[in-house]
Length: 347
Image (cartoon, rainbow, N blue to C red; front, side):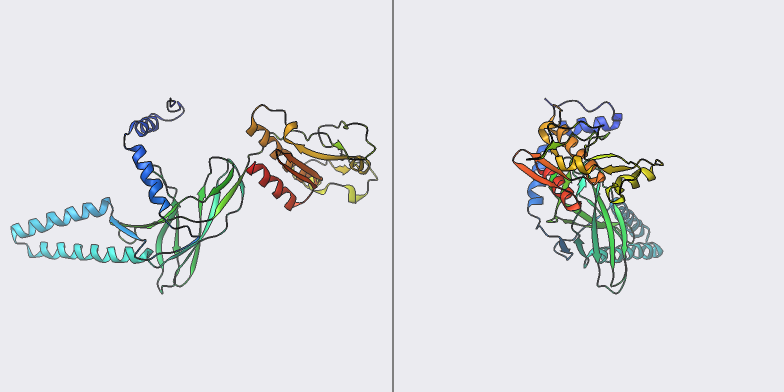
């Protein structure tokens, strides 16, 4: 049984949510949307032609049509020559505006740049390049993620220069971690009069990787494990951080200072320095194991491991990752961090 609309919503939003659930045509509309979107070709580059650009009057356009009909009837009834002139002048302007509006979108080429991975809970911005070979500029081009029903569009507006290019960013917030296909996008224009809406639909082939959201506040790193064949007797106990690092001592070589941690400390107004403990690092190694994240919920454990990966990377430590069926050997660097985050996103 479906739960009621959240009480945090406004009364209008709750009524709309309730009406959407009780609408008998809602399942049919969703099925039609899935069928229709499946028929769109998958491509990261779309050339707009007469075959994939659509046009219909807006609310203002229908009102203008009604006004023209009233003017025409009044001019015929009262034999007003100036009425005929005004009616056909407005009608001619509407027809010219229709052709300009359609040509404003037709002929554009849309190209989606490869989206970068991002963390769940934050919006990702798709970079889209609009190219035009026409000798005149194009004005008022809007792009957005295609919504369903009465879902609001968050438009990103741009103008395309003559025989030039323009870049625009469209925001999208995935609901869960993992690998997601870029949603269907829509582009439209109502230039110049706003009496006609010209639009197109675009289904990119690219996919975006969503990392798990890290746990906040970040928990302390687990203690290091004895290396195979090492001299350590047991897991060392530290002060909340991996025992391969310790507080800076006067006389420590500069190469042992964890400079990433030092830069962060200086940025926050403190002077805490951390040095690598060479002896401890030789005896122990840091493993981030899902089984050691003592939380009941699976997603919470994934979030804790994500926070551990980011914290170990900031400290410049060598760390490994253990997941069910996946083991990534200890290493450091941006590539290692990316591999660990990808494994967490897809596990």
